[in-house]
Image (cartoon, rainbow, N blue to C red):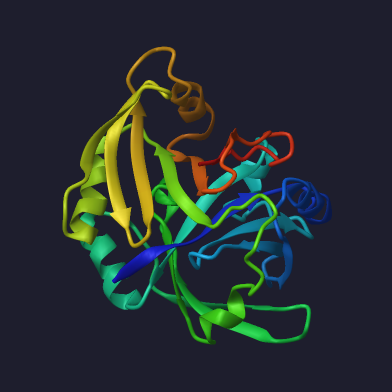
Length: 256
C-alpha cells in the first residue's frame, strides 16, 4: 500500500551552493551521499517523515532522467512514494496503465560510511514524474532519513504536490485505480486550471491542466511536458507564501 510521499526531488547545478541557499531560507540541510550513477545529494527532512532531496551531478551523465531538466533550469523534477508492498504497488500501477520497471536494488554510502540499501520501481519515459517512482527500504528507513527535522522557518512537512498535465482524465484514472477511489474535482483560480485531487497518507496530490490561455501551466507544459509543477510545505507557525525561486534554484515552493 502507498503510504504517502517519500520525498521530492529538486535537481540543482551545484550541491554545495544549493545547500547554502536552502539553509539561508531557514531549512536544516543534511549531507546525504553519493550514488553510483554520478549524482550526490543533500536532504531536508520533515517531521511528517517525508523529505526534500537536493541532487546534483558530480560527473556528466546525459543518459540520466534528470540531466535534461537540469539543462532547462532544474528545480522540482520528480517525486517518490513510499510503499510497504513494492511488488504489489508496481503491479497496481501497471494494471492502471503506467509503464513501470520491475523493482531493482539501489544504494548510496553516507558520509559516515554506512551503506543504505533500498529497492525502486521507476516509471518509464514521459510517465516518470507524473506517476511516482516507488521505494521500499532494505536497510532501516530511519537510517535513510535524517533525524534533524526542525527548521528555523517552521516547516513541518509536505502539504500538496501539484502536477501539471495535459490529460487529467488519463492520469486521474491511474491514481483512482491504484488508490481505489476517484479523485475530487477541483478548480485552481490562481493557476487558472482544473483537475483532480487525491489524498495519499498525510499528503495531497493535485493533478491539474490549464483551463485558460493565460494559465501559467501552459508555458510550463510547452517547455517541460507533464511534470511536477509546485509543492506547498506546511509551516503552521510561519507560513508566508511563495519562496524566492532564485534561492530555491527554480523550484516553486510555498509555505502554508
